[in-house]
Image (cartoon, rainbow, N blue to C red):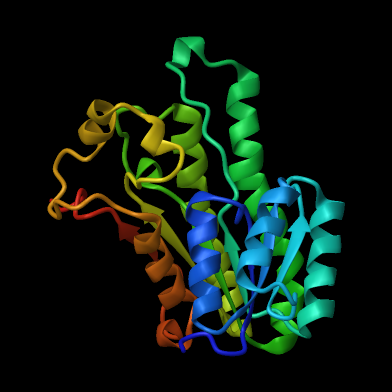
Length: 248
């Protein structure tokens, strides 16, 4: 197994991409801290994965609140004895045309998607430095790579910022043995996107080289690679998982 014995945090793991990533980590042998603002969702997930709680714990965390993040990191390390991987997946989107977008809509997305990612990175950095090893995987988006139909400027700006944060932090933490990378998924069929009528989802996939729809498991596979020893000489990259939409 690719992650045997590793201890990982996955934020926003109650559903969607975070759930798929956490499940993949667990299958690969990792001990997983399931973080989400919705405690019921991660408790249900923990009970399905590991009712004993030895390899999976459920923690209620708002990633924008420093005290909650610091407490959750301490709880995770206390339970697992170490911390090897952080996946910053928690995020929101509030799409609107710019003339309809309020400052609150813009700032609320930036706060969770960017500030929340920063707070979590800052909280785990001292632990990983002490261990002289760690992997941080930040979830960006195709929307942060290029302007896309149906992507609000708040979401696009936040996911572009995640890429910049990833690159800078990779340089800063690399000498301490910490790798920092990002994943930029394209349109993925999740609980949320399955509620859309087919036409908008199809339009987001225009130009795709691979005809099958993207699934959360496709992103989870990329996360396993970046969290495992197979990517030990990879840092500061943004891995595009989009079925070839960005091929020039």
